[in-house]
Image 1 (cartoon, chains in turn brown, yellow, blue, cyan):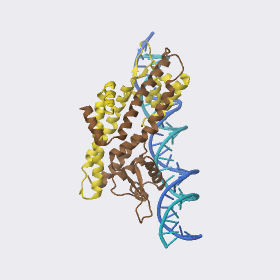
Image 2 (cartoon, rainbow over the protein chains, first blue to last red; image 1 turned 45 degrees about the vertical axis):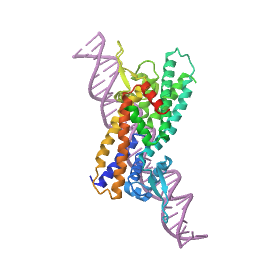
Image 3 (tube, rainbow over the protein chains, first blue to last red; image 1 turned 90 degrees about the horizontal axis):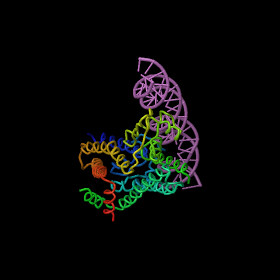
Image 4 (cartoon, rainbow over the protein chains, first blue to last red; image 1 turned 180 degrees about the horizontal axis):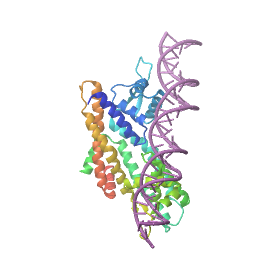
Length: 168
Length: 168
DNA sequence: ATATATTTTCAATAAATTTTGAAAATTCGG
DNA sequence: CCGAATTTTCAAAATTTATTGAAAATATAT
Protein backbone atom coordinates (compact mmCIF):
# COMPACT_ATOMS: atom_id res chain seq x y z
CA UNK A 1 0.00 0.00 0.00
CA UNK A 2 1.22 3.47 -0.88
CA UNK A 3 1.64 6.11 1.83
CA UNK A 4 -1.07 8.36 0.38
CA UNK A 5 -3.65 5.62 0.50
CA UNK A 6 -2.55 4.44 3.93
CA UNK A 7 -2.83 7.98 5.29
CA UNK A 8 -6.33 8.33 3.92
CA UNK A 9 -7.42 5.04 5.41
CA UNK A 10 -5.94 5.94 8.74
CA UNK A 11 -7.64 9.34 8.83
CA UNK A 12 -10.96 8.00 7.72
CA UNK A 13 -11.08 5.11 10.13
CA UNK A 14 -9.82 7.20 13.01
CA UNK A 15 -12.74 9.50 12.25
CA UNK A 16 -15.24 6.65 12.25
CA UNK A 17 -13.70 5.30 15.44
CA UNK A 18 -14.09 8.70 17.08
CA UNK A 19 -17.81 8.83 16.41
CA UNK A 20 -18.24 5.69 18.53
CA UNK A 21 -16.67 7.55 21.40
CA UNK A 22 -18.61 10.79 21.43
CA UNK A 23 -16.02 12.68 19.39
CA UNK A 24 -17.14 14.17 16.12
CA UNK A 25 -15.76 12.85 12.89
CA UNK A 26 -13.95 16.00 11.84
CA UNK A 27 -12.25 16.50 15.18
CA UNK A 28 -10.97 12.94 15.11
CA UNK A 29 -9.80 13.31 11.50
CA UNK A 30 -7.88 16.48 12.22
CA UNK A 31 -6.29 14.74 15.17
CA UNK A 32 -5.36 11.76 12.98
CA UNK A 33 -3.85 14.04 10.33
CA UNK A 34 -1.72 15.87 12.89
CA UNK A 35 -0.62 12.59 14.48
CA UNK A 36 0.92 11.38 11.24
CA UNK A 37 2.36 14.72 10.15
CA UNK A 38 6.04 15.03 10.92
CA UNK A 39 5.83 18.81 11.01
CA UNK A 40 3.22 21.22 12.36
CA UNK A 41 0.46 22.22 9.93
CA UNK A 42 -1.48 25.43 9.37
CA UNK A 43 -5.23 25.76 9.22
CA UNK A 44 -4.98 26.01 5.46
CA UNK A 45 -2.97 22.79 5.25
CA UNK A 46 -5.66 21.00 7.23
CA UNK A 47 -8.54 22.51 5.24
CA UNK A 48 -6.94 21.44 2.02
CA UNK A 49 -5.94 17.98 3.16
CA UNK A 50 -9.36 17.10 4.59
CA UNK A 51 -11.52 19.21 2.26
CA UNK A 52 -13.35 21.03 5.00
CA UNK A 53 -14.29 24.66 5.49
CA UNK A 54 -12.32 27.24 7.38
CA UNK A 55 -14.91 27.60 10.14
CA UNK A 56 -15.16 23.89 10.72
CA UNK A 57 -11.39 23.54 10.83
CA UNK A 58 -11.03 26.39 13.25
CA UNK A 59 -13.70 25.18 15.67
CA UNK A 60 -12.39 21.66 15.77
CA UNK A 61 -8.78 22.70 16.23
CA UNK A 62 -9.86 24.81 19.16
CA UNK A 63 -11.72 21.86 20.61
CA UNK A 64 -8.65 19.66 20.24
CA UNK A 65 -6.66 22.30 22.07
CA UNK A 66 -9.28 22.31 24.86
CA UNK A 67 -8.87 18.57 25.15
CA UNK A 68 -5.12 19.08 25.50
CA UNK A 69 -4.36 16.95 22.43
CA UNK A 70 -3.08 19.65 20.11
CA UNK A 71 -0.98 22.72 20.66
CA UNK A 72 -0.33 25.93 18.82
CA UNK A 73 3.21 26.24 17.55
CA UNK A 74 4.69 29.57 16.59
CA UNK A 75 7.36 29.35 13.94
CA UNK A 76 9.72 32.27 14.03
CA UNK A 77 9.42 34.52 11.04
CA UNK A 78 5.98 33.09 10.19
CA UNK A 79 2.76 35.02 10.57
CA UNK A 80 0.48 31.99 10.46
CA UNK A 81 -0.21 29.72 13.39
CA UNK A 82 0.90 26.13 13.18
CA UNK A 83 -0.56 23.17 15.01
CA UNK A 84 0.91 19.91 16.15
CA UNK A 85 -0.43 16.91 18.06
CA UNK A 86 1.13 15.11 20.98
CA UNK A 87 2.78 12.06 19.42
CA UNK A 88 3.24 9.91 22.52
CA UNK A 89 0.15 7.72 22.39
CA UNK A 90 0.29 6.85 26.06
CA UNK A 91 0.13 10.55 26.89
CA UNK A 92 -2.74 10.96 24.47
CA UNK A 93 -4.69 8.16 26.12
CA UNK A 94 -4.03 9.53 29.59
CA UNK A 95 -5.16 12.98 28.51
CA UNK A 96 -8.41 11.65 27.04
CA UNK A 97 -9.08 9.55 30.12
CA UNK A 98 -8.45 12.56 32.34
CA UNK A 99 -10.86 14.77 30.44
CA UNK A 100 -13.63 12.23 30.16
CA UNK A 101 -13.32 11.34 33.81
CA UNK A 102 -13.77 14.99 34.69
CA UNK A 103 -16.56 15.65 32.22
CA UNK A 104 -18.58 12.45 32.60
CA UNK A 105 -17.65 10.10 35.40
CA UNK A 106 -17.35 12.64 38.19
CA UNK A 107 -20.70 14.37 37.55
CA UNK A 108 -22.35 10.95 37.33
CA UNK A 109 -20.93 9.91 40.70
CA UNK A 110 -22.14 13.15 42.26
CA UNK A 111 -25.63 12.49 40.98
CA UNK A 112 -25.59 8.92 42.26
CA UNK A 113 -24.67 10.17 45.73
CA UNK A 114 -27.83 12.26 45.74
CA UNK A 115 -30.05 9.57 44.25
CA UNK A 116 -28.93 6.97 46.77
CA UNK A 117 -30.60 8.99 49.50
CA UNK A 118 -34.08 8.66 48.04
CA UNK A 119 -36.92 8.74 50.58
CA UNK A 120 -39.01 5.66 51.18
CA UNK A 121 -39.25 2.32 52.85
CA UNK A 122 -36.61 -0.13 51.71
CA UNK A 123 -39.09 -2.96 52.23
CA UNK A 124 -40.91 -1.56 49.19
CA UNK A 125 -39.34 -3.51 46.36
CA UNK A 126 -39.39 -0.51 44.04
CA UNK A 127 -37.36 1.50 46.52
CA UNK A 128 -35.08 -1.43 47.23
CA UNK A 129 -34.30 -2.16 43.59
CA UNK A 130 -33.67 1.50 42.88
CA UNK A 131 -31.30 1.94 45.81
CA UNK A 132 -29.50 -1.33 45.13
CA UNK A 133 -28.98 -0.44 41.48
CA UNK A 134 -27.74 3.05 42.25
CA UNK A 135 -25.41 1.74 44.97
CA UNK A 136 -24.03 -0.94 42.71
CA UNK A 137 -23.22 1.54 39.98
CA UNK A 138 -21.74 3.96 42.47
CA UNK A 139 -19.49 1.33 43.98
CA UNK A 140 -18.06 0.28 40.64
CA UNK A 141 -17.85 3.90 39.46
CA UNK A 142 -15.86 4.92 42.53
CA UNK A 143 -13.46 2.05 42.00
CA UNK A 144 -13.05 3.02 38.34
CA UNK A 145 -12.45 6.61 39.39
CA UNK A 146 -9.61 5.61 41.71
CA UNK A 147 -8.11 3.26 39.18
CA UNK A 148 -8.11 5.92 36.50
CA UNK A 149 -6.49 8.42 38.87
CA UNK A 150 -3.56 6.09 39.32
CA UNK A 151 -3.39 5.36 35.64
CA UNK A 152 -3.29 9.06 34.79
CA UNK A 153 -0.26 9.47 37.00
CA UNK A 154 1.44 6.31 35.79
CA UNK A 155 4.28 5.86 33.36
CA UNK A 156 3.56 3.52 30.52
CA UNK A 157 6.36 1.11 31.42
CA UNK A 158 5.25 0.95 35.03
CA UNK A 159 1.64 0.48 34.04
CA UNK A 160 2.17 -2.21 31.46
CA UNK A 161 4.62 -3.97 33.77
CA UNK A 162 2.04 -4.10 36.50
CA UNK A 163 -0.69 -5.29 34.20
CA UNK A 164 1.48 -8.11 32.98
CA UNK A 165 2.25 -9.13 36.52
CA UNK A 166 -1.39 -8.90 37.46
CA UNK A 167 -2.60 -11.00 34.56
CA UNK A 168 0.18 -13.54 34.35
CA UNK B 1 -36.12 13.30 47.12
CA UNK B 2 -39.13 11.20 46.22
CA UNK B 3 -38.71 7.92 44.35
CA UNK B 4 -40.60 9.16 41.29
CA UNK B 5 -38.31 12.14 40.88
CA UNK B 6 -35.19 10.11 41.59
CA UNK B 7 -36.20 7.55 38.97
CA UNK B 8 -36.73 10.26 36.39
CA UNK B 9 -33.37 11.83 37.11
CA UNK B 10 -31.65 8.49 36.91
CA UNK B 11 -33.25 7.61 33.59
CA UNK B 12 -32.62 10.99 32.08
CA UNK B 13 -28.99 11.21 33.11
CA UNK B 14 -28.28 7.62 32.14
CA UNK B 15 -29.63 8.58 28.72
CA UNK B 16 -27.39 11.63 28.49
CA UNK B 17 -24.45 9.56 29.67
CA UNK B 18 -25.15 7.01 26.98
CA UNK B 19 -24.98 9.58 24.20
CA UNK B 20 -21.37 10.33 25.18
CA UNK B 21 -20.59 6.70 24.59
CA UNK B 22 -22.09 6.12 21.18
CA UNK B 23 -25.33 4.68 22.56
CA UNK B 24 -28.53 6.43 21.62
CA UNK B 25 -30.53 8.22 24.24
CA UNK B 26 -33.60 6.02 24.09
CA UNK B 27 -31.68 2.77 24.27
CA UNK B 28 -29.87 3.98 27.38
CA UNK B 29 -33.13 5.18 28.94
CA UNK B 30 -34.88 1.88 28.39
CA UNK B 31 -31.88 0.16 29.91
CA UNK B 32 -32.00 2.49 32.91
CA UNK B 33 -35.72 1.91 33.38
CA UNK B 34 -35.29 -1.86 33.33
CA UNK B 35 -32.33 -1.66 35.71
CA UNK B 36 -34.43 -0.03 38.40
CA UNK B 37 -37.57 -2.09 37.82
CA UNK B 38 -37.96 -4.93 40.28
CA UNK B 39 -40.11 -6.91 37.87
CA UNK B 40 -39.95 -7.45 34.11
CA UNK B 41 -41.84 -4.92 31.97
CA UNK B 42 -43.78 -5.16 28.73
CA UNK B 43 -43.29 -3.00 25.67
CA UNK B 44 -46.41 -1.08 26.63
CA UNK B 45 -45.08 -0.41 30.12
CA UNK B 46 -41.90 1.01 28.63
CA UNK B 47 -43.72 3.09 26.02
CA UNK B 48 -45.92 4.61 28.66
CA UNK B 49 -43.19 5.22 31.20
CA UNK B 50 -40.83 6.90 28.73
CA UNK B 51 -43.42 8.42 26.37
CA UNK B 52 -42.00 6.94 23.24
CA UNK B 53 -43.58 5.24 20.25
CA UNK B 54 -44.10 1.55 19.78
CA UNK B 55 -41.63 1.30 16.91
CA UNK B 56 -38.92 3.12 18.78
CA UNK B 57 -39.42 0.98 21.85
CA UNK B 58 -39.32 -2.20 19.86
CA UNK B 59 -36.16 -1.36 17.94
CA UNK B 60 -34.25 -0.30 21.00
CA UNK B 61 -35.29 -3.30 23.05
CA UNK B 62 -34.06 -5.52 20.28
CA UNK B 63 -30.78 -3.64 20.21
CA UNK B 64 -30.40 -4.07 23.96
CA UNK B 65 -30.99 -7.78 23.51
CA UNK B 66 -28.27 -7.86 20.81
CA UNK B 67 -25.91 -6.24 23.25
CA UNK B 68 -26.75 -8.95 25.77
CA UNK B 69 -28.00 -6.45 28.34
CA UNK B 70 -31.69 -7.33 28.30
CA UNK B 71 -33.53 -10.59 27.99
CA UNK B 72 -37.00 -11.67 27.03
CA UNK B 73 -38.92 -13.22 29.89
CA UNK B 74 -41.95 -15.38 29.27
CA UNK B 75 -44.47 -15.31 32.08
CA UNK B 76 -46.64 -18.38 32.13
CA UNK B 77 -50.24 -17.67 31.28
CA UNK B 78 -49.29 -14.34 29.67
CA UNK B 79 -49.40 -13.70 25.96
CA UNK B 80 -47.24 -10.57 26.07
CA UNK B 81 -43.48 -10.62 26.18
CA UNK B 82 -41.76 -9.21 29.23
CA UNK B 83 -38.25 -7.78 29.40
CA UNK B 84 -35.73 -7.56 32.18
CA UNK B 85 -32.20 -6.24 32.46
CA UNK B 86 -29.20 -7.92 34.02
CA UNK B 87 -28.92 -6.31 37.45
CA UNK B 88 -25.35 -7.24 38.33
CA UNK B 89 -23.47 -4.12 37.27
CA UNK B 90 -20.15 -5.88 37.01
CA UNK B 91 -21.68 -8.29 34.51
CA UNK B 92 -23.18 -5.36 32.62
CA UNK B 93 -19.83 -3.64 32.38
CA UNK B 94 -18.10 -6.82 31.24
CA UNK B 95 -20.75 -7.41 28.61
CA UNK B 96 -20.40 -3.87 27.24
CA UNK B 97 -16.62 -4.13 27.21
CA UNK B 98 -16.83 -7.45 25.41
CA UNK B 99 -19.11 -6.11 22.69
CA UNK B 100 -17.22 -2.89 22.12
CA UNK B 101 -13.95 -4.73 22.00
CA UNK B 102 -15.34 -6.97 19.30
CA UNK B 103 -17.06 -4.20 17.35
CA UNK B 104 -14.43 -1.48 17.57
CA UNK B 105 -11.05 -2.41 19.00
CA UNK B 106 -10.48 -5.62 17.06
CA UNK B 107 -11.30 -4.19 13.61
CA UNK B 108 -9.07 -1.20 14.38
CA UNK B 109 -6.16 -3.47 15.29
CA UNK B 110 -6.62 -5.42 12.07
CA UNK B 111 -6.48 -2.23 10.06
CA UNK B 112 -3.37 -1.05 11.88
CA UNK B 113 -1.62 -4.32 11.01
CA UNK B 114 -2.18 -3.59 7.34
CA UNK B 115 -1.25 0.09 7.57
CA UNK B 116 2.00 -0.66 9.35
CA UNK B 117 3.27 -2.38 6.23
CA UNK B 118 3.07 0.74 4.09
CA UNK B 119 5.57 0.92 1.22
CA UNK B 120 8.33 3.49 1.25
CA UNK B 121 11.67 4.45 2.63
CA UNK B 122 11.69 4.90 6.40
CA UNK B 123 14.31 7.62 6.00
CA UNK B 124 11.53 9.73 4.51
CA UNK B 125 10.16 11.52 7.54
CA UNK B 126 6.58 11.26 6.31
CA UNK B 127 6.88 7.51 6.12
CA UNK B 128 8.68 7.32 9.43
CA UNK B 129 6.15 9.40 11.34
CA UNK B 130 3.28 7.44 9.85
CA UNK B 131 4.76 4.05 10.72
CA UNK B 132 5.82 5.18 14.19
CA UNK B 133 2.35 6.52 14.95
CA UNK B 134 0.60 3.42 13.69
CA UNK B 135 2.99 1.15 15.58
CA UNK B 136 2.54 3.12 18.77
CA UNK B 137 -1.21 2.89 18.60
CA UNK B 138 -1.05 -0.78 17.72
CA UNK B 139 1.21 -1.58 20.62
CA UNK B 140 -1.04 0.09 23.15
CA UNK B 141 -4.15 -1.31 21.50
CA UNK B 142 -2.82 -4.87 21.69
CA UNK B 143 -2.02 -4.42 25.36
CA UNK B 144 -5.51 -3.04 25.99
CA UNK B 145 -6.99 -5.96 24.10
CA UNK B 146 -5.21 -8.49 26.29
CA UNK B 147 -6.07 -6.63 29.46
CA UNK B 148 -9.74 -6.50 28.55
CA UNK B 149 -9.75 -10.21 27.76
CA UNK B 150 -8.65 -10.98 31.26
CA UNK B 151 -11.07 -8.49 32.73
CA UNK B 152 -13.96 -10.07 30.84
CA UNK B 153 -13.13 -13.41 32.41
CA UNK B 154 -12.56 -11.99 35.87
CA UNK B 155 -14.78 -12.01 38.92
CA UNK B 156 -15.41 -8.64 40.42
CA UNK B 157 -13.89 -9.50 43.76
CA UNK B 158 -10.79 -10.90 42.13
CA UNK B 159 -10.49 -7.90 39.87
CA UNK B 160 -11.00 -5.25 42.49
CA UNK B 161 -8.69 -7.10 44.85
CA UNK B 162 -5.92 -7.09 42.28
CA UNK B 163 -6.42 -3.46 41.45
CA UNK B 164 -6.14 -2.53 45.09
CA UNK B 165 -2.95 -4.52 45.39
CA UNK B 166 -1.57 -2.99 42.24
CA UNK B 167 -2.27 0.59 43.25
CA UNK B 168 -1.51 0.43 46.93
C1' DA C 1 -1.95 54.77 11.68
C1' DT C 2 -3.11 51.97 7.82
C1' DA C 3 -3.34 48.14 5.07
C1' DT C 4 -3.27 43.37 4.91
C1' DA C 5 -3.04 38.80 6.61
C1' DT C 6 -5.08 35.76 9.69
C1' DT C 7 -8.36 34.00 13.03
C1' DT C 8 -12.90 33.73 15.00
C1' DT C 9 -17.81 33.88 15.15
C1' DC C 10 -22.34 32.51 14.07
C1' DA C 11 -26.73 32.49 11.37
C1' DA C 12 -28.10 29.80 7.66
C1' DT C 13 -27.89 25.36 5.50
C1' DA C 14 -26.93 20.63 5.00
C1' DA C 15 -26.39 16.11 6.67
C1' DA C 16 -27.04 12.50 9.84
C1' DT C 17 -29.66 10.39 13.19
C1' DT C 18 -33.71 9.36 15.71
C1' DT C 19 -38.60 8.85 16.12
C1' DT C 20 -43.15 8.08 14.66
C1' DG C 21 -47.16 5.53 13.34
C1' DA C 22 -49.59 2.83 10.42
C1' DA C 23 -49.34 -1.33 7.74
C1' DA C 24 -47.57 -5.98 7.45
C1' DA C 25 -46.16 -10.04 9.63
C1' DT C 26 -46.31 -13.19 13.27
C1' DT C 27 -48.03 -15.69 17.19
C1' DC C 28 -51.27 -18.23 19.66
C1' DG C 29 -55.73 -19.58 21.92
C1' DG C 30 -59.96 -21.51 20.78
C1' DC D 1 -58.02 -22.78 10.42
C1' DC D 2 -59.80 -18.13 12.16
C1' DG D 3 -59.45 -13.99 14.46
C1' DA D 4 -57.60 -11.18 17.90
C1' DA D 5 -53.46 -9.88 20.24
C1' DT D 6 -48.88 -8.78 19.75
C1' DT D 7 -44.58 -7.80 17.46
C1' DT D 8 -41.93 -6.09 13.66
C1' DT D 9 -40.82 -3.24 9.78
C1' DC D 10 -39.85 0.84 7.39
C1' DA D 11 -40.91 5.18 4.72
C1' DA D 12 -41.79 9.70 6.09
C1' DA D 13 -41.28 13.39 9.50
C1' DA D 14 -38.99 15.49 13.24
C1' DT D 15 -35.07 16.44 15.66
C1' DT D 16 -30.34 16.89 16.52
C1' DT D 17 -25.80 17.68 15.11
C1' DA D 18 -22.28 19.21 11.92
C1' DT D 19 -20.73 22.27 8.27
C1' DT D 20 -20.37 26.23 5.53
C1' DG D 21 -19.02 30.77 4.25
C1' DA D 22 -19.09 35.43 4.65
C1' DA D 23 -18.69 39.13 7.89
C1' DA D 24 -16.50 40.76 12.08
C1' DA D 25 -12.67 40.81 14.99
C1' DT D 26 -7.92 40.55 15.80
C1' DA D 27 -3.03 40.69 14.99
C1' DT D 28 1.05 42.26 12.66
C1' DA D 29 4.20 44.38 9.35
C1' DT D 30 5.51 48.59 7.43
